[in-house]
Length: 347
Image 1 (cartoon, rainbow, N blue to C red):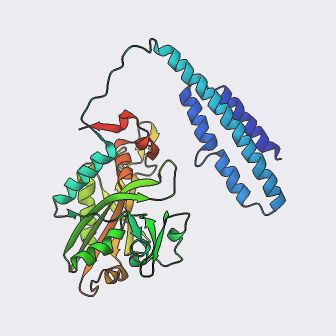
Image 2: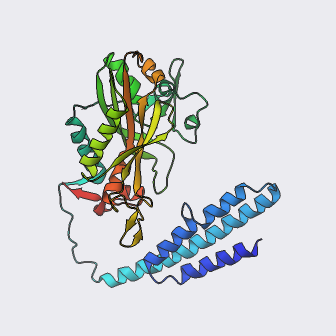
Image 3: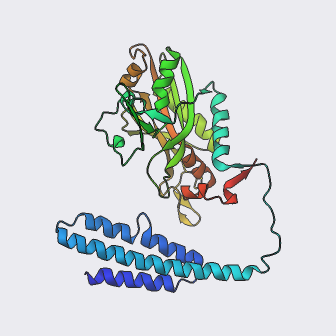
């Protein structure tokens, strides 16, 4: 085995054992096991190895060393936590109870988003979270071979298969509401927001298997990109503050054409990318991504029974946890579902 790799792993063992505080220990843990950590790098390198026998040997070695380091980390973490507990004092003394009448950050964000859009004439309508494949994919111009339709990206439900609508899924996005709303109303104008839970098999600092999204759909005669930009700017100012700037960055989505990512200027460094401590740790460049948007694709309008030669529209989809994390400076989405009271707001 590569002596450089072994030396690096031995160094990490000593670093974990000699960590001077729980905070330092957690930083080392991220450096080793994080999304961009050392083991992520090792396994990426392993994936490129063409010699299958060598690949098998290296894989077994990496997994063994990873388990050893995780054991060292857990042991050292327990030592810090035990020391902290010993310093607390008399554990029989009653604690200070949490204030009643509080609201979770996600719930608070949902209520604020609902109020913001209701002021400009948008109504809220809800759609199934257990959905047919057709409304989640085909109706949104996503072909059968699209990567999002793989089991690795979507939760498929073990249930009846419709000849017309296909299999059932836990809806991966709120965009299933677009065609359903067009079919429900039959004719524009449409100004709808759909707030719902969505499901994708991901779990890391920016993804959880169940998250919340809010979808916006506006369809009428003469709708253009200017209307989309104006609405995005309005939302950003109302939710994040009046100094926030907005930009549309070209992107590609199957259900919109043209498509854009919506970015806002970073509210932590005022869009400069620099803070008193140096480079902004939140944005790195002065801009933060909110989510996807664009003008509704003619094929999606057609699926909704609307004539694209007469009507046009725009749509967007943002993660509620994401906008809440930006606003409240939370660096790991999993913290929102940890049960910690500091992620509950006073109502």
